[in-house]
Image (cartoon, rainbow, N blue to C red; front, side, top):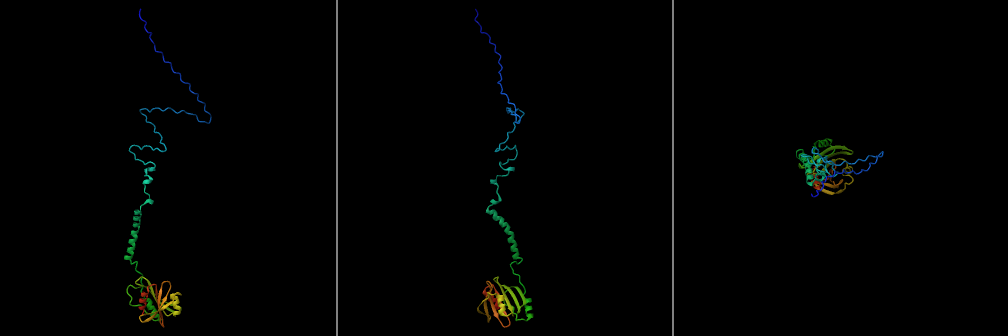
Length: 254
């Protein structure tokens, strides 16, 4: 008797899976947007390129190959503020160079004015016309200071008729660069001295110059004066020059 053979098993047909019931989509309410389910991400095909993801607020897109590198945080690729040197941050050396550039032309112009145009030289006048006019009037004896050096500059000269007489004035610039004036007039001294020396003019005592007795006076401000009283005229040497220069000028009046 043959042994029993196992029965052949036929694979059973797979039972199709029953899909899970989906939840019913609620009907859209009027006035509200319909809900759309996001589509599942699909892998890119061989001929497709992935879409670029939007850059966040703190992210910057990578530059294209071969393009210029743009510094983050500065539009147009300008350097950062910490690397940019502003005008207010110039060093003292830069400021000194700028000031020197402005001063050099001024110094050159000033040197040209003084050296070639005589900018420091005072404007001088010829006293001869005023002296001739005074001598022609023959109102009083006229004297011209003599013996003064070339460093005494005549800067003014005039002869005028005034109330009570006539007055001749000759102004000088002394060697020390101060002012002095010789006044000769036939106006009475009691009227002439208050006008020429002002109310501040006070006698300070006599002094001898060239054998003649002069009177020392104070004058306006820091000026001082030497006064010679003669029968036909009064001579006043006045100015802000030093006393030795005033005495030198008074001694030159002959």
